[in-house]
Image (cartoon, rainbow, N blue to C red):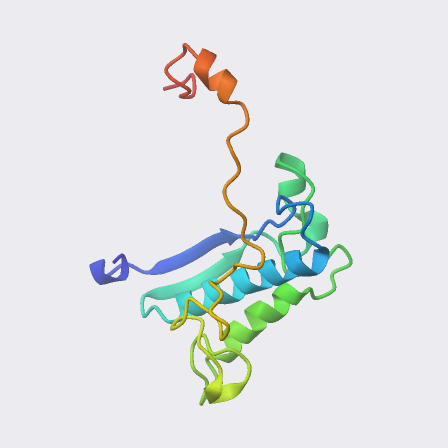
Length: 158
């Protein structure tokens, strides 16, 4: 809809945080989730004619802003030692679809592979992200919200 207004579409300051996935999720599962998100978002963006660019919020986990403001995480496409992570290859695969003969969003496997942008389920009928997506947790701190008499939880400057 934004492109329909004649405006350019950009993704700015992207990172994909994974440390808050359930503790039961192994590192491979967290990496798979991060890779899938990077690849799918970029693939979808590349299919939009008004898409103009993507900027990541840094490139290596060693210097991620998330650690200074929130919690320990590894949200970028290079690790602490500046080595490519699996998520790097998700971005790489999305960009490869722009090659001659490629199809935006095409999964590895050529023409017979399903396309991220055309399918919400895999060949086994599993929904996208089913393996690693978790239901939203109950809000922590509800008791604080109930006792809040200052503008119903709004910041004090409003």
